[in-house]
Length: 217
Image (cartoon, rainbow, N blue to C red; front, side):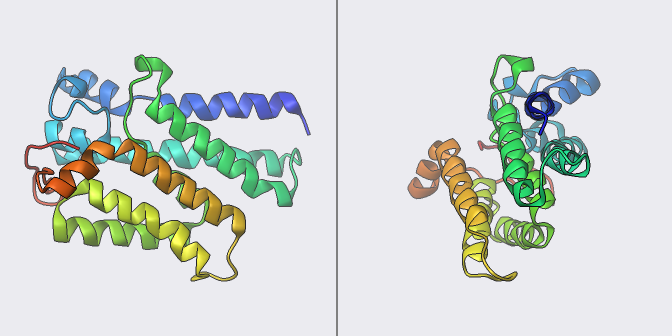
């Protein structure tokens, strides 16, 4: 194994995650910094709210692609015979987590980014596409029913380790289960204020599929 290639891949995963798509897209095409409007969050949800569905969709897809590409760096190392098949999942998880950290703490915009949900989705798509699609379905159904992006994100993230644990798609992989619960914990930590507002009944709703309503996420 080439330690240099692994280090380069780690740096590349972080830089990919750090791409502030909402900030650059908002300023570049609209002259608007989404961090100064709406919830002030540099993520896809606030982009939907401030700039509309088209801009929000673009930003979300870019953020998903960031996570997917960073995670697939492990596959590149595998096909280059730098890592073995038994190590592939470990490195996919490593690079994906680093990309999420990059999204939350992006070097390009003073380490103040989004909450990492779309980037996490891209990572999960690269690791387990079938399970990712189930989680997406749970997210969409929850969002349609509640219009709470925060609640939808939390439940969809929780679904990943739970479904992995009970073996919905075959024998459970312990590393995936542990990773899933750690990611769920991260999502809970980054959504603490949203959870408090949900419990207090004053969390704002966002109707992404039919226009947006002002609020916070």
